[in-house]
Length: 349
Image (cartoon, rainbow, N blue to C red; front, top):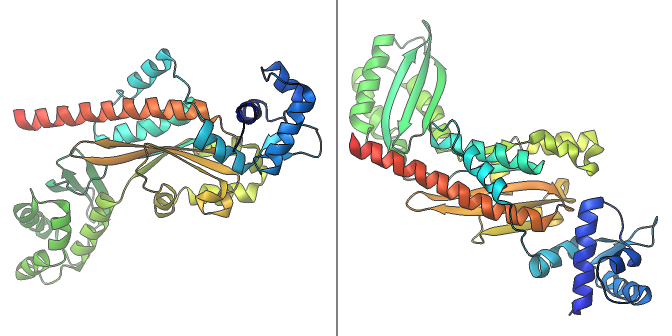
């Protein structure tokens, strides 16, 4: 159990270290309002070190936070900073720019977060398991290539360029599109996915000798539609973290955050609105001196989404938790507005 003075000392050391990157000594703490002698403060610092919450560096008599110290601070001492009204206004207006579909908002949120914080930001949109197929069409690009497009009722558009199999004529392809639209439009994507593996191949076989190429086309494009999209802002910001001067390590981390499956594992689901994981808690040695601050949000009738920041363990947690709290409210508001406009448009038509 820490005394109130020890809590104050730990908080001040963490705040100072995140700002300067330098060990913090007793004289600095006296100047910042710790009402005790230098000797008493040093004794408290030793006690915090013995508890594993502070570490002593070889080059200074000052102390720096340990990973355990950061954990204690986040769990027991952190008070989120208030976000400046001008910053909230800027975030709000940025989330309203160039919005054509849901992914635009999600992608925009990652880019804005990375710009505001100078860290690497992730944004994962609301779950989309109940989306319905509202349209499928193809656009010929040349004799052997097409652009296949599917549209869902939530405004998501997936497109993919395909090479037409040698044994499939263009007019055959058009017939297939009509059959699939007749049978699948209006169905939930999960049902579409299942029927493309069971019912549709049987129907297509009545008309065509082979459907292998068409099935692979749908496999790819529907996998794209189902795949949780994680948008990343500020990938190269990883280079700004002092620890990452090791080029090999930077490449490994950069490669990992390019992998959607690995990212999905990294951004673990959590019932907490704000979830902070530090160092080894991330479950990968590459991240042992990094932290992730993750904020979850929920859109009624549309599921949950996540925004997150990846940075060094010495991130200014109070500032960033306050920012993410404000940001998730603005993002929730922007998404709700988008869905309302979509429902209004669909109802109006």
